[in-house]
Length: 548
Image (cartoon, rainbow, N blue to C red):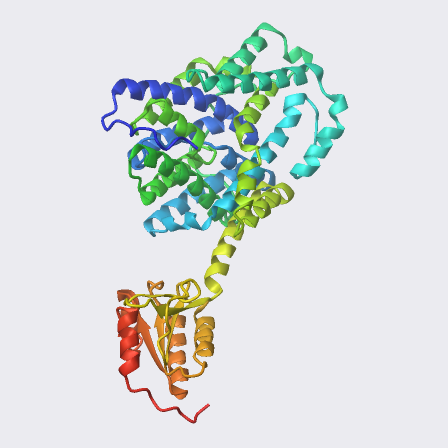
């Protein structure tokens, strides 16, 4: 995490800062694009075009001064899993469908969806994803061929083949990794040090000076945007359907990552960012990337924080970075082709090395609660693979939310002595019950999944000796659906047959309107619990019915 006591960014960024920050971002994104293309299993052009589209689109739609849209490690890994299952056409279709879902979600005001991916699930997913990517880079780092569908099998196959490592490849890869880690430490003291740029530049220099390819070292090969075509992938209907099945989960992961980056940096700078505009920017960028056969794009924290640190306090920094990347592609294609594969694998591992530590997982587990879901998400990615692990991670988050809201719980309230305030009796022993009046408060909003169960809980508590009226405090409910209204109607009828009255307190405007539309005007409504209790004490309670 970046320090939160950093002074706010200047409100009027200078053109010089924007230009220099754009060059710094381009210097970071070019090697990252080459690395993420290796993760995705496609030529670097697909990651570079994704970065260009993201940088060109975001300034005109997005709201963050620091968010930088490009390919990310998580999106590249998900893309690679879809390539393995559906081919590159299906993966590019996934990018376009995901972009379309972003547009639909923004227009439908569904930016709240990312909140359903809990932080423990994101931590577990991110950790296991980093482990998966690093393990997949080990064969390229050491020249040891390894096969395996999932991470444990691939790691075991690699370990068994270490005795057959290609000597020069392993030496070059391990040396590049050691140099990257040393430069990363030096960057803390000298901000100009860019480990990925320097390591790749040294690898290119060695490749140009020595016949590495003749000694078995694999090179990246030509890096060019030629051959990319404008248009949607030509697929049959079944492939588009399968892409649409995966797209919602990818959308939630991308938005959670992007929104987290944009919002955390905005808070440090005293800015405001708008979630729907961010969704529109992500949608337009991913659609554009799909049309040019690019990878999925999102606002990764590394690139966005680099923009912040470099002083790029303007959304137009991305345009400068795009121009610099385009210039590099025009002038340095031959140099990029000389990058040795073990050096590229070392850069990928270095970029992800800070995510491999288990400390965030252990810290989460100490908090209990839903922390176990971090381990479940991590195990899902490692055992099932990135694609199904991602679906499991999103599914677990949604399941946890539904489980919490669908399991009804109610607190009995009592009056604090000498006040008009009603609080939970189990937390405030000094609070006092009102004789003859049972006051209950649902702990979660009432909706179709818990309304009937809540009505049963209220009816059970109302059976206590001496209860003549029930006050239900429903301040947690912002609206009421049909199931909830019918459950309240049935509860009121049930209590009336037993000679008890039902009153609703702290009911908001939307639930009031819903009750009126449903014709439930015979249930008394009150703005405060105190008023409802006072009315219950003085009202005429219906005589107990002999009907069951």
